[in-house]
Image 1: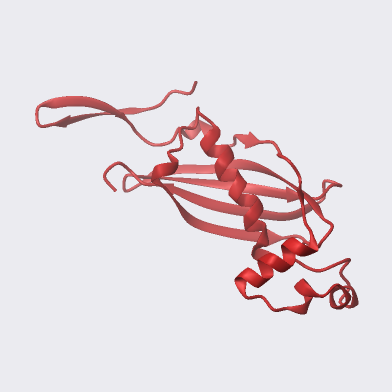
Image 2: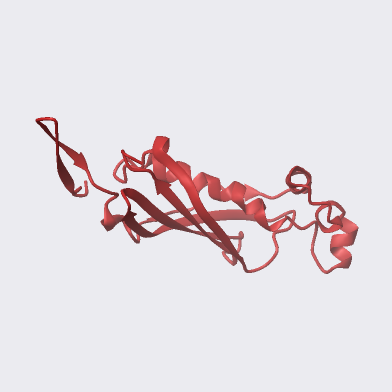
Length: 168
């Protein structure tokens, strides 16, 4: 189990020790891919409709094929569905000690290497890239490497999670 720094706090005559920040030694820790996600026409259409994306590329296989794609194309933000599972993995890591009850989403970005299309079977591996504390809050940046069945990169995503401090 990693060492955790502690801060001694004195309040109204009592002294207690509380953990300070997420452990910096977790920077570089990787989590292997989980169960593959099967991208389907139905899931693409459902997501596109939910976000108001009316592009025929996401709804009509013929239009998508005429545009050079193997099948309908997922909206770029559909990969958020896959990256949400990363939070579950991080919260389930007892050594990291991420308190989901105090966590909020700070930022997210995607670097697409190619479009996601129906029929893709995707896996996601994640790596903690950065941990720092600012103004009493912990910030954790995690990279998501999304690949297809052949192992070819499809997208690299990054998410910053903020764990609010006790007094935040």
